[in-house]
Every structure is written in structure tokens, then in C-alpha cells.
Image 1 (cartoon, rainbow, N blue to C red):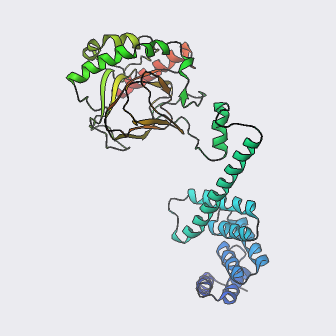
Image 2 (image 1 turned 30 degrees about the vertical axis):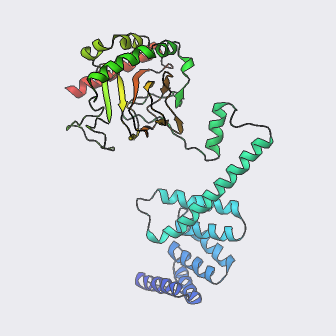
Length: 388
């Protein structure tokens, strides 16, 4: 049979109309005529598959679907129809592979057509149900083999949660500069830093200086100030908002002599930490104030060559937490928290009172002295270029 493009388009419209009217045999004839005229028509094979499905011709449907997927491996309609058939036939594991394939293909589309939504929703439900079933099975299996997941090695516990889909994987994604081959650690163990206990021991002295500052300056300047020459692509709600306030000792490099003079014990404590001194970049050290019922939206820091430290000074009851990647930890007064802010993180104060921490950055311990000097030279050179 020889058909021109106009005739093929007409048959295709007639086939779709017949399918929608429940006239599966008529639709099948139209699509078979197109296939006889041209063997390279994934749309005709897909139409044939739907027609065979309505006619309960499983063999014909599968053959047609294989032809579609040979030509278009990522065809979402074909993937979901094949998955539906496998699911009904009792082949749940195989069905899951095709449902997941449909979801993966859909994730690559800028806009998902409306006629795909129902199939993708089925796929999503199937994947979620399977994940829950797998997580339940694995948790019980580990328990039966004598593994206490609440007390096992922290790294293994994290890997297990990732494997069963309980947590999402979060990696370093600094907004400005990425240094390769550094470990992906969300929260560091403070006991691995020999200076940490000295700073914790100074908590009462630091808090006393903070309280003196608060008596004179109940509102700190906003941590985020609007800069007209720079686009603000993230959440703007905290720009120029004192709900997230800052009393800086160093701000992205420059030193504030007036603020430092008001808190000499705080400055003496900070001298014990390996602050990264890079002109116009680091360090930053400040009293970071988060007012009642305020949330800092998820964001990534600029560099993965540093870590951020919080020394909690004022923490109201039921305050909230700091989330880094897939871990949440509450602040505890006097207990240092050290984390990688190049991993997506957020913080919130759900209480009715203000929370304040001493926030400062440090060099990552994995970097050698040579690497620190090279990074400093490069970032200062980049700053000189941008300032020219």
C-alpha cells in the first residue's frame, strides 16, 4: 500500500477518533494501514498498542510497544502502558522498571503534556509504594539479623537511610568556588578540632559581652543587605530584614574595629580558631540573631574550602534547628556545631523569642598550608579582576 503524507495524517486522526469512541477494531485497521505504508511510525505503533489493549490482545499490544520503544526508547506513553500491563500481569518488579523509566523521561521535559499526567501519576504511586515496601522489608531484615539501626555506625546508618530512600543525597554545590576531592561531610565532629573546647569554655564570657551589646543595640543590622548592582535570584524575604540580624567582627574579610573593641573576650576566643583570611572574601565572624518565628530559606554557601561554626549563646525552648543536607540538629547553648555550608542548608526559629549564635568560618582541615595559600592567591586575584 502506498500512502502520501496527507492520507497518513487522515488515517491517524481517524484512528485516534476511533480509539476515543471505543471502536478498537476500526482504530486497529487504521493504524495497521499506516504501518503497512511506512514502517517508521512510532505514533502508529503506539495507536496500535492502545487498540490491541482495548481488544484484550496482549501479544499484539506487546509487539507494538516493542516497536515503539525500539524507535523511541524514552516514549512515556509506551513506557507507562507497558508498565501497566506488567503490573496487571503480576510482574511488579519489571513494571517498576518501566514506571521509573517513564518518570525519568518526564523529568527531562520542560513541560509535561496533559495527556501524560494520569500515567505518570500511576507511575509515581507505584514507585512510592514499592519504596515503602522495600524500606519496611530491609528495616525488619536488619533487625532480625541483630543490627540496631539506632546505635550502629553513623556512616552506615546514613548509607542505609539513603539506600531505602528515607533520606535524599545532598552534595557540595558552592555558589562561587568549588575545590575538588573534599569529603562530603554535612556536620563535623567538634572533637576532631583541638581548639573547639577552648572556644566552648569561653561561652559564658562571650554571652556576657553579647548581652551588653543587646542592651545597647536591641536590633542588629540585617544580615542580608540589598545591593542594587547584584541580582537576588533566591528568596528575597530576609533582604534588609532585621529578623535575621548580624553584629559583625569580620564581614567577608574586612575587620570592624568598633564592634571588636566592644567584645575583647569574644575576639580572644576567635583567635584560637583557624580563620581563613582572604581579602574581601573571608573570614566572617559575627553574632547571628534570628528573631522569633523566622526561617532562613535553603541556600548554599559561596565556597567549599571553609566550614561554618555556630556557638549557640541564646537558645529559647523549642527554638528549632539547623538542617544541613539531610540532617537536622537543634542548637544547644555552649555546644559548638561545625558544618559544611556549601551543602544546601536552612535554619529556623519556631519559638517566641530570639536565638543568637556566634557564627564564624574556618579553613577546612583537609586543606594543606600550600593549598590554603594557593586558594587565597587565586581568590584575591579574581577579586582584583572584578574590581578593575
